[in-house]
Each structure stands twice: as C-alpha cells, then as structure tokens.
Image (cartoon, rainbow, N blue to C red; front, side):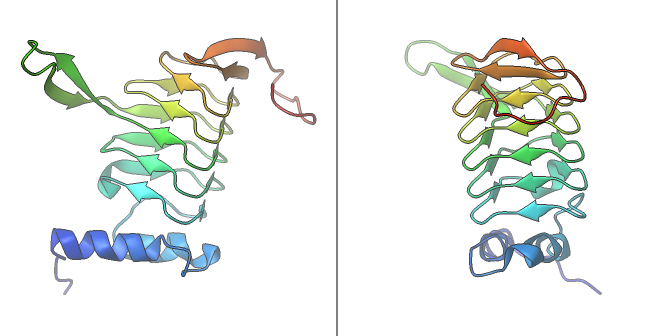
Length: 174
C-alpha cells in the first residue's frame, strides 16, 4: 500500500529527482515513480519545475531541457516536442483589479503544443495558447496568440516569420 507523501516532502523529492545529481536517462523514470504521469520515453534536463505534476502530459520522444518551467496547467506537449532551456509555460493569469490591487482574482488556462514542435530557449508560452504541430518558437519569444502548424514564430510578442513545409529539414531556424 502506497502512503501519500506530504506536500513539502513530495516537492523536495521532485526537486531532487530533477536535479543534475540524477543522470538524464533516469530522471523521467524516477519522476514517474514519484507520480508524474505521461512522461514515458521522455528525456529531461535538470532543474525543471513542474508546479502541478498531475496536470502535465508529455508525449513520447520529447526532450525538455534544463530549468524549463511548467505552471499549474493543464499543459500538454505532443510527441517529439523539443523544449529549450529556461522555456516557460505559464497558465495562470489575473483579471485587472482596482488601483489598490491591480492583480485581481486569478485563473488557469491550458496550453497545448503539437507533435514535433520546437520551443526555443527562454521562450514564454502564455495561458490558453496552442502551438501547432511542427512549429518553431524562436529563443526568447513571448507567445501571446495561437501559432499555426509548420510555421516559425519569433519576437516579443511572437509573430509569424515564415511557413515551413511539413517535410522541411536542415538549416537553422530564423
């Protein structure tokens, strides 16, 4: 019989399991044993933050690089998704309140990233966004609206730079 772990103990175990002391090939297995579901056949860098592990699903063949941040969710990454270091998936937002406290009550809206997408280093994907399959989000981009499949987006806010053919390969992203 499994005993439920207290919140602070569970967070400490998640932090340790995701640290650089655990070899990359074992991180996903260890995190899965701690209760992180949906990360079969996923490579995980170190220092990744999962604010609510129960609301994250990552498809097989995906890679999440060092220090990526996953807010409370729900967040769904398709198969073969690549996430650059320090990328952020922010699902929480607040309404605008009165001047005494501008950040009013908050809510979370899910994020979906399609199969084969590539989220660049330091990119920020905001609440309610869908990134289409096969898309590339440039390093440092702030994604404020949905992204079409097989397209390159970059900038603040992220804007579409060009289309990609579904079979395109080679070269570097813009």
